Length: 280
Image (cartoon, rainbow, N blue to C red; front, side, top):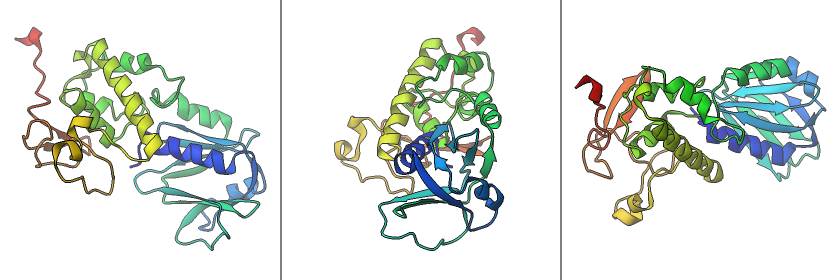
């Protein structure tokens, strides 16, 4: 599933290509046809992301709400000679009226016309988004610091923290030597702030490059003399999808398990099981 940096990058691209422009709105597949007809010929003001949700603003309290889910793609094409016929199941197509740009949405979990109130309801039930300048990490800490749930679960809960997916979860916890099953309430405020600050930096870099790179300079392929990662997610990582392979830091085999239906990755040496001193 695309993580928050992908949606922010997409929102920026949509705004750069279509913002302030009149657009043709269609639904070649037909599932969004009625809503598309209401928006066709309107000005697209801008697009913004909140966690894994994308909102395209057409003014007058009208938004197209998109959640890509596991299989969705939203491809933006600018400076084209001509707009081609749709290929595949295109739920939503945007075409700039000069005919030089278009965007196709396929396979999304959500593609719906939303009011301002409906958009606000999605935002209100979402946790702070590390990529938004108005995000307040204290809101997430209020939940994490009181919860007995594993931090690996809490980081993926979009009502606690918006935009974090499986890759950022695995890599963030590894970078801070925190076991993913450690209860949230056992973290110290300083640990949470360090996690948050690191997450802000990592995700901002993801927006800039379009990939998730989490290894420090001393652990890059060039620095270690190892082969680059070959994976369709791209980017260099420490443990994500590396189960059974040696940890880049200590050499122990990366472990994997399933937590709440998602694969979990960690290094048992670099991320030891948390032992409460109060229990000893």
